[in-house]
Length: 80
Image (cartoon, rainbow, N blue to C red; front, side):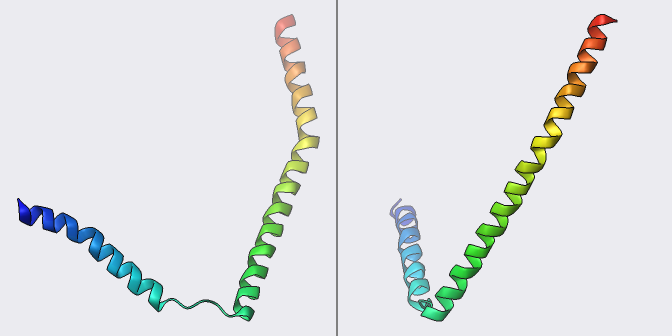
């Protein structure tokens, strides 16, 4: 019973030890690297926003003819 408890208790200890080793190995980016990463993320946001905006704008002109076509089909079916 105590061996099972010690095995379960070892899991968080091992996780914390490995996490500490990982954080100690990591290095903070220098100013130049941080600026490059920030610029890349910013460009990605702008590109994705532009794509979303274009897609949204392209749906507006298409929706009116689709709704008119649907209404015309509904009228002809109800008359016939």
